[in-house]
Length: 212
Figure 1 (cartoon, rainbow, N blue to C red):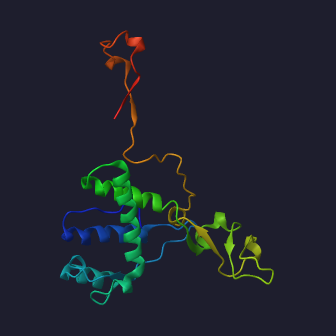
Figure 2: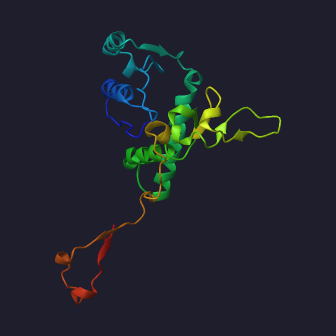
Figure 3: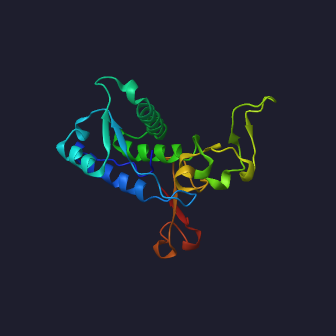
């Protein structure tokens, strides 16, 4: 899931957001400097937002094949279904933890997507993240029983694979979570000295921040 997970009110907005995402993917330069692969297939559950004539015309012009799952068979699109479930379970936990109402669901979904893209691990070809080529290469177990090995790029197998976060696979940068804070927890903002009224006593003794 991409960080810029679109949240929209009407299903009619879905096609426009899909076009934006495809443009981003096709213009993206991979970490190894090569151009990103072109989008050639889009798989959906056959929802009305992707069943319009506008969607069909755009796919035809773009050379994209649109495949659809069998009705009432979410198992055929398992990866997306599992991702959606994981994201919404995290968002639900944030809302309950923060003791806030469902009107903040979109904010919680954005936060859950952001964290998920920087914590879970996916397996990708090492050439997508060349700076990690010497780290934790996933290979079939050897006779010695080792499940992973560090290899030099000169002696690597034709297509070694590494475990990275989705964000690193996307941008080539190993993410940090040092700036992340618990959602809906109290935060403090600095009160400029010009806004300290002195009503609660000498201005020098007034709080330098306010909580909210």
